[in-house]
Image (cartoon, rainbow, N blue to C red; front, top):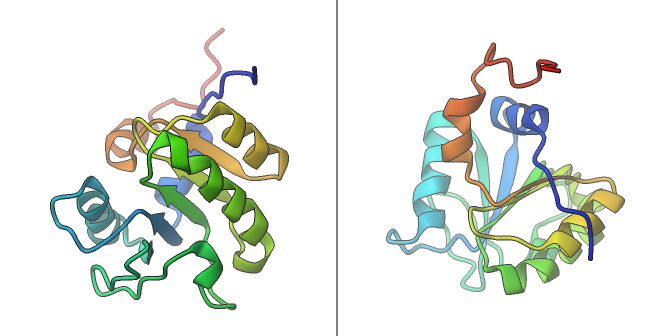
Length: 155
């Protein structure tokens, strides 16, 4: 049994306040899906550049899609891999992100609300990636405005 992962408020703040490219795994062109709505929010509200990753390789929100992380072209820098896949499938995505980390410049994995895989999180952290698990950027953003004291020592 791996240790329980804890999300670091400083990591969340950095990811949501630093303009970057996010590969959104599970982002297809279905507007009824959460990935579609959250990624549009990331793009419009935070200025995030998106790389949709979905078996359909659909273009979404004006951004070229790819079937897998491995299909993203060399020279593309992806800071965050945002995982909108179920918990049973996220381990394979995490392992692919670890494998592609150096080529794509991946620094962090964000496992969406309800997506939990403690072992995968531990593998990613062991490979040097920051991990945020079981939450949504749209939920976290209002909580981590600058000056919120999230990094303050309270004991």
